[in-house]
Length: 265
Image 1: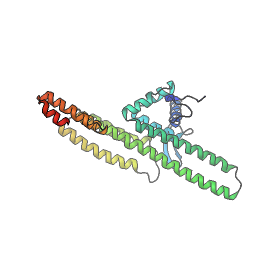
Image 2: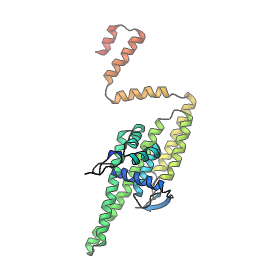
Image 3: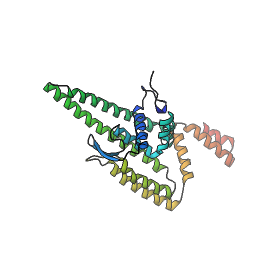
């Protein structure tokens, strides 16, 4: 029988890397592990889980940064979808699915690397040793690239959603602090510039947003209406929207029935 994990997952389901990392994060928090700086596959990071799934724990900690750890640990303890649903409600299903799939891929690459490393220890032929070393080098590079791809995806999408949710100056200040403090939980490497570049771009956008709020005040109601129109457009229900809109105009301005039918046709 397949083993059940948090989020209602089974051992043959996707999301196992998220599952294992979440469990390890909670265990490390419970044991009050100190944050230590470590280096894996040329990736430097601060982690409370240096010995178990450090890369996955770092990335899961990054997504929990936007939801809080309570939903994550609640799911660990009760094997439910609280964390998944919390994340999806704040962002969307596509982002959640992409992250969980990529985390699984990262874990699989690490497992493959462990197999090649184990095989290398018992290999004696020179050609085989060279071939395995080449494979191991490629696997390590793939792990490094995938880690940063996931991290960049989290940064770009989650902060962009947070930016779109800004309505007040207080919201803006909170996001600035959140963006600045995120530097403490990312992995870095020589030549890695994505976070710094994104930081500068978003800070500029936040300054522009501040000017907008100061000039026009809070316009959250207008934003909600625009969002609603966008959703209708994306769902390809333009005709239904136009009819609903015109019907509302009819009630407001008491247009005659013939005029409305002209638009309906």
